[in-house]
Length: 206
Figure 1 (cartoon, rainbow, N blue to C red):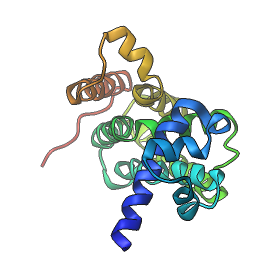
Figure 2 (figure 1 turned 180 degrees about the vertical axis):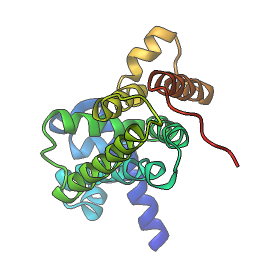
Figure 3 (figure 1 turned 180 degrees about the horizontal axis):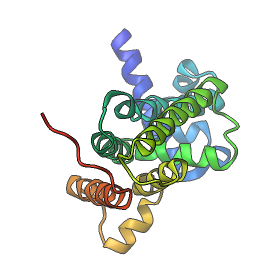
Figure 4 (figure 1 turned 135 degrees about the vertical axis):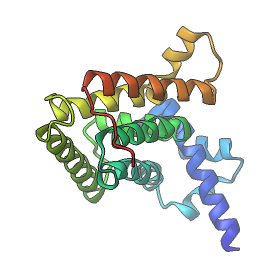
């Protein structure tokens, strides 16, 4: 029974990600999500007490990947390795959590009214810690004296665009769907631009 419940919850959240990403919070009806998931509407309310609760669950589903993406800044001693890993993680989020990323972006653009205070604080704290790490590397002469905050904003914009503006990318490329190699190419190009533009010192290998 527990596995059935978990499977249904995952299905509902995945479907809700798609519907909220397509139509937004206000225009989405719980019945729309139930129909797309192939479940009775009552099942939605069994697992989630309201549309608002389900929407928050969708937002929370991407918080943990976003927080984990910052890990290289705390784990790596070399700025090259940290930036490479962070950019790769951010592009992977755009690939694996595209719908949730769109919902998250829309939430942020509207002032984050549904995100919990705890999630907002965690995201802010991790961003600030990572920016401080960049400041230390700049002070140590291991990368150019760029503005670390705007560097982070630039990475966010260039990586998240593959999820949040995928329609535009597909139109320009003439693709119906991006493939794994497209995301790999994006990650490599963004990394190259960041490392070259920030004059990041090559990692010292033992």
